Structures are given as structure tokens and as C-alpha cells.
Image (cartoon, rainbow, N blue to C red):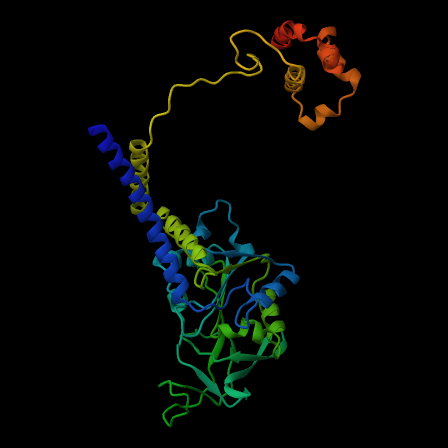
Amino acid sequence: MLPAVLKHLRERRLRSAVIITVGVIAALGLADFLTSVHQLSGYDGGWNDLSRFRGALDAAGYNTSSIISTPALLNVSEGFYAYEKILVIIGVERPYLAQEVDTIVDFVNRGGFLLIADDFGYGNGVVGRLGMSFYGRKLFSSDFERNPAFVRINATVDSVDYTVLLDSPTALERVAPGWERAWTSDDTWVDENGNGERDIDEASASQPVVALWSSAGAEGRVIAVSDPGLFINDMWGRADNAAFVLNMLRAWFPGAREVMFDETRHKPETVREGAWRTALAVGVLALGNIYGKAMLGLMALLAVGTGIMAVKPPADWRHEDTLGELSFHHLARTSFRSEDRERLRAALLEKARISMCMYPDEFERLSQDELRSIIRDDDLLRLVEEPGRVRLEELEQLTVEVRNWGRG
């Protein structure tokens, strides 16, 4: 009675642990799926996604990839050549953890390139570490297309002028002299109170919207753009947007070959994808510090211990060398059937193939003379070449010969 009760408790404990773990991860994935706005993905074709931008990068010769769990992965790989890579962060819809920001800044310090575009999100968690910020209030301008939210600016890259159209941008703050690369016109104002109108206390002034950050203490560079809308599918073909972005990357990020899209701050396609992303991120982040490693180790020990308690020990068994101990039907007395000729023939050919260290397709291509030179036994050759002429009463002796073949 008592063993049965203990067994039931062990099974319930294992099931409960699995259900709780899967439930937590699924709940986090579901929350991610339900609370985000689906946009700014490099792998979707919606009007506010980035597939045209990514396609243009592919056509320009860059290798594009994505990060779907956490940018903390940037410092996991040994031999990671940061100076050949561009990390693209377009829109920061959820804040980065401190560990992730540390990894991104370290990536830049090691020579990596960062393109970050944000307006009203959480991008300041990253660029704030570099000494600048996104203002977080919408810009309006008298130099616009269709309505004042579509702000038109002039930008220059390598002495080439571009007309660039922005979609509801903000401004860059605390940009050091020499970092600015593009500004709005002088008749631009910031909607401080968010009412969508120009108030008397909202003065006009040119505002920086594109900056190129560099530092003597860092080998990499950062391009900050105060408008993710510049890169979306709907805006990519407007004005000179596409040419400006591609030439900006080519000129200001020299030597870069790979572009990595950070997809971790955008909505997943499915709940399963959200749960998978969450599980990956938790695992990577936990491995990044001693406390996380200790927690994962403890969870692993608990899982193993629970599994040991729940799983019934297997019965005694032993592995048999089926080529060395050839038997038929497991009968008490030796008895053969007509199909056993082919079984014995197949066993002999398999032993011959293994003895020659050949792949099956190589062995099948052997000629008859080559096969004869390998086997070199008339009785066994008769079994191979003319199995129909082998009598059933001969199979017992041939079985012994097959078993011993190749041992001398």
C-alpha cells in the first residue's frame, strides 16, 4: 500500500513541476503576444514593417540575420568580430534590461556598429549610456508633405544631398557638437503638451534628428535616428529615404558585412513564438550572472531528482552483438526457412561492408570480382551469388562460417 502511495506522489510531483514550468513560460509568451503592437519586423510585409529595408540590405550585399531572444547573445560567441557587424534596433517597444544594455554598449566598444531609431519608446535606455537621448515629444514643421507630421529634412552623406521624409519624428537631445548629421528646418516646433497644435509658447527652432556618435574610448560607431518611421515599408520609397539610409550605412559604417535585426522588442507572430522567445531570453540572461547560473543549476538538480523518483528503474537487459551471435527465430532447436537464406546472405554482406569501412552506397558499387576478393570462400560466395542453390540443411554450417568470417 505504502509503495503505491509514494509512487503516486512522485508522479504528481513531476507532473506539477512540468505543468508549472510550461504554464509560466506560456503565460509570459501570451502576455507578450497580447500587449504589443505588431510592427517594425524585418521579416513581415506590413505597411509598418521593415521587410523592404531588409531586402535592400540583402541586395546591397549585406548578410542579414535576426536576434529573437535577447541581445545579450552578442557576447556569448567566442571569436565574435564586432567590427564587421551592424546591430539594427528600430523602435524599442519594451525596455532593455541592464544586462542587455551593458552587452550592446560593450558591442560598440569592441568595434561594432549600432543603428538605433526611436521616438516615443524606450530607446533612451541605450543611447542614454552614450550621452544623448530621444526627446519623446512629437515634432511638427512648416516644411512638410501632406500634413505637418510628415516632416521633410535635407541631409548630406559624402557631399551628396538627399531629401528625406520623416513620419511623426521627435528630436535628439544632448547631442554633442560634431555629432549632428541632419536637422529639421528653422520653422519646426515641438508639441510639448501633445495637443497636436502649435501653441504660443512652442518656439520654432531647427532640431537635430540624425546623429553619428563616436568616442575615443570606443572602436565602434552609433547612428541615432529620432524616427523609426523612416525605415518602414510605407516610407521606404518616399523622397530619397532608401538611398539616404543605404549610403549612410555604407559611408558611416565602413567594413560592415552583416546586419543583425533585434526583433526582441517587437510582437511575436504567435503565442508559441512568444513563449519560445521568453524561454530563450530567460536562459541566456540567467547564464550571464552567477546568481542565474546557481538558480538554473538548482532547477536542473530538482528536475533530475524528481525524474529519478518518478521513473521506474528498467529491468535487467544486455546488448547482443547480432553479427557475432547470429540466431534465427529464437527457437530451442535449429530450424530454418527459405527466407533465412536471404537473412544469412544479408548478414554476411554487412560484415564484409563493415570490415572494409565502406558506406552502403560505396559497397553496392563493388564489382563481382572485387566482392570475391573480399570474401574469398567458395561456400560463402555461393551463398552471396546463388542463394537459391543453398539447401536448407546447409544453413546451419553456413551460419557458423558467417559468424566466424573475418575473425582470422
